Image (cartoon, rainbow, N blue to C red; front, side):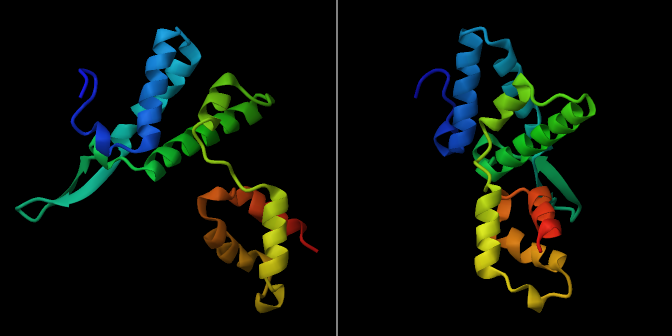
Length: 160
C-alpha cells in the first residue's frame, strides 16, 4: 500500500478509481477544465447516503464511504450533471462544451436509435397495448440505463 492509497481503495468501484487517477493526472498536467469537471463530480458524492435506524428507533441517513459508492451511483451523478449542462447549452443555443465532453467520457455508451428501433420491431406487439406509449415501460426495462428515455419516447411518437 502506497502513501496515497487508502485501506479501502481495493474495495472502490473501478470508475471511482479511474476518476481519482484522472484527477491526479489532470492536476499534474495542469488541465484545469478536466480537473474542475472531475472535482464537480466528486463534489456530488456527499449526496449519496444510506438510510440507517438509530438505537432509539429514529430513522436517519449517513454518507456512503468510498468503498460503498457503486458504479451506478457515479453514473447517476455524471448523467445528472450532463443533463443539466445540456439544458444550459440548449438555452444558449450551443451544441457542446468542453465540460460536457469530459462528463461523457465517464458515461457508458447509450444504445443508438437503430438498435432501439430494431429491438422494438422484433419484440413489441403494439396490438397488446391501448396506445404505443404504454410499451415504453417494457422497452425501458429491457434497455435499463443504456437507453435515453427521451429518445425512446420520440421513437414511439414517430412509430407508424
